[in-house]
Image (cartoon, rainbow, N blue to C red):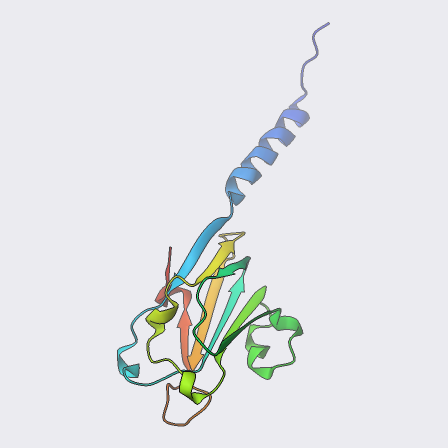
Length: 150
């Protein structure tokens, strides 16, 4: 006796396959920073990266006397993360003291690697600033469209 699949079964199979194709495989990307001309010669001491629908895979380069911390912005007590409470993960990189500040974002090009889990809702925002002096890099917000992700 031959058994045939019903229309409901076939529909369910097609729906599952279409959903799997729409989601796709997670994408591995690295963040590359733009040149910010009006910041030339100014040092920064802090980088905050907030991502949605993704997670941090690796940090491949950490400058001397800098620290790295991953966190969940919604649960962090640091008020600087409050605007990013809706994001999935946060990454904070900071200089240990004023002498280890850096003047060129290119030092971090490709060092922050992420896995995009859902391209439909993926977003990334970066804040760069010098929180150690008044004459350093002023707070600068870089959106996804400002960054090169590859």
